[in-house]
Image (cartoon, rainbow, N blue to C red; front, top):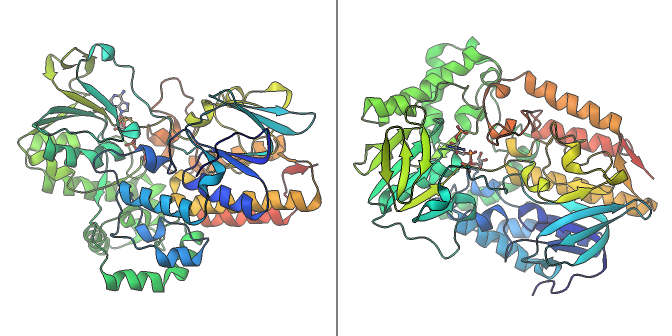
Length: 536
Ligand code: NA7
């Protein structure tokens, strides 16, 4: 069952029914508030509903990529492996929606077009693409950080007579690429996951790479009964650790600096981390790796060496070795047979730096001086991250100010959760929060719980509303910028910087202060009577 009608008034509207939206619905209901969630998809899941491309999988350990708010839920769900595939995560989210009867608060196939503040009443009027309107005291955006797909404006794309896909909106009925000539554009997380799988199906695969990416082996494994029960036995400790860690993972940075370590010892540690697989090589490395170029180069050299060990053809090795940004400053990918794939006879790597992409023709792609004939093009070209999905909604706050216009030179938030001039509007994993720099569910739970407690407080004291002050917001934006500037992150043309979207301002959007310290800071803000907010 789902919410079949849009009521005229509810206490709270949640936009989106992915990992964030589902927990927000649950939490608002806990407060006894009437809640309506509006979801564009036909079912729950958000990212995991849309990203169904072959090889789609999570780069966080399954047992940490899960809700922790309900202890029996933690115990009853059995993950099959270390890094679960998309269908398994979607099944989990469906299980959560069923178990807590969340669908009854969700209206599916409903896209929010606008949300307008009525200053006189302090309420939000939310309008959908079906023409329905609902008023609510509280508006919570749970729209996802990577949900506005980016397809590059390549000349001639409309002339192409073959099939065209974007990894982030993959057809639900599946796609059979068996025996086809396929081009994949993009070698970020999605590209690196899908390329090895498509290579096994396609007759010929051409990978069009703009920037080579660093990847570390995932070394996925099936969780046997023993390992699964060990994890369940220590889930409480794991949960506490991730919440207070730097990036929401079950491991943390090492003490000390890499450049102070004996190079042989460091090498041994890298080899161990490489063999173990996962993010530990970078995110459980030494603190100086992400702030000092010399330390960073040591790790980057190690990964470049590993690429050279795996790939047979020296020219392909040279194309695959990232050289123009520090490791870790673009999202490091966990791969399964990615580099090995280039040893296959049916796979060709094209560097768009050597052979620029000119246009798509009716039957292929013209790069450099040649045309490559293909039956299908897969765009693994990413998303308008962090602000893209919010920007698609016409959000108007105090004095009719549009959020999009307010953010024209870069997003401005207080704690990544609120923006001055937009009272009673809360963002889950908004820009200025550590969300995308972390294991998402850990950040999502923290945000949802903070918002729940804040709304609970407003209800308890009978306040009409809450709004971030401009002073607090200015201070936070400055702090976010300064924190990023002290690291190597701004050196990469990443989607964290808005660099993948033509015309988007180059501003480092996520907060790099760490999940644990951020949690602590948000808690202190609340303890000090919602410092930096005006509660009226
Ligand atoms: P990403 O990580 O943004 O990767 C997109 C890829 O597409 C990347 O290799 C881009 O190269 C490439 N790209 C983007 N635009 C173009 C154009 N116009 N021409 C050629 N190549 C292009 O998106 P993903 O979906 O892989 O992953 C998104 C996040 O999901 C990821 O960070 C994880 O958090 C999970 P570029 O590097 O920009 O030169």
